[in-house]
Amino acid sequence: MGQKRTLSIVAIGASLALALTACSGGGGDSGGDGDTLKVWIMEGTNPDADAYFKEVGTAFKKKTGAEVDVEIVPWADAHQKFQTAIAGNTMPDVAEVGTTWTPEFAEAGALADLTSKAGDTSAYVEGLAQAGTIDGKLYGIPWYAGVRSVLYRTDVFEKHDIEVPKDWKELRAAAKKLAAEEKDMTAFPVAGDASYFLLPFVWGAGGEIATEQDGKFKGALDSPEAREGVTFFTDLALKDKVSSTGASTWMENDVQDNFIDGKVAMTLSGSWTPKAITEAEPDLEDKIAAFPIPGKDGGLAPSFLGGSHLSAFNGDNEDLSWEYIQMVTNDKYAKRWSEETTYFPGKKAQLEPYVQSEDKLVQPFARQMAEAGKGLPVTADFGKIEGKRMIQTMMQSILKGDASVEEATTKTTKDMDEAFGGS
Image: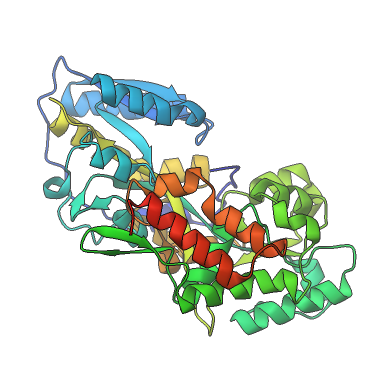
């Protein structure tokens, strides 16, 4: 999911010890003597993953008698590796699965149904639990996630006496003022190759990417509400001129690079990015802060909640797999994982200390995740839509003047319907 920021939170350890509760109680020893649990974990999220999983493995063996064999898998190779393993029936027992992949692997029949083991899912962050639930059954246990909010230059805001926006009207006004006063900066990039930048405005206007009826998904970007959100976002560039022409093809890393170079005043940004920004440009350490994405008329607009589930694969070790998932997501190891990776934990009680943090580069993102994190349509077919970059293509066609919002959303909705299996 990108670079990360160290979560430097005052007294969080004490508050976590008092506040956190496990999602479901452990079932005791699983009688795993002589067994070896095969686990796949994605590479790069935790810079000290070897030490982390060695400690978890030791604790797991003490509890269950079973060994744990952890294989670190590069994200770039993971999807194909999973597909090959599923086809050849050589799956691991437990794996870290990206939240957008869980529906695909569940619909392929590879994942174990964890509904009865997990029980009440209300202790999990809602968007993450929904992303792991297919046809009412839970196949992915929320582990960790990140979310996008608004990152901004505090020194520039102070220079022009700009308050943190509380709704879309104020967001637009702030961006327009920045554009007028800071000629050498992009006030608010409308990044045409960053689909997750658009979604808060579609959702914030009451729209959806796609809707489900009777088990069948249909594209929904042609609804009046979705079009309102698309219009607001693209008009920031086309009418309000708060973005740059070049930003119409920017990806998220392009936005980050320009922010580091001092060329961006305010932008959507992931919760994992501030550390990379300040490491690349230490002078920005005391000049940046964040705020949740404001809603259309106040409150918060939903922001895409992306991260990982822990899933058990169908096989002979499902009970032992569940014990391992419980251990990795318990309070002790969830806290350590968050501290080492800068991503937020998947349980509400574990997230709450971050929501209460005084860190200006932690609390706003945590609040965004707790109050307004949202997942993508829970269907394997949505992978086709992402693979064909339909939303990015739609945005760029609007920003380049090749299509109106109505034309572009109509075409994209039709393309989505075809990806979902026809209208």
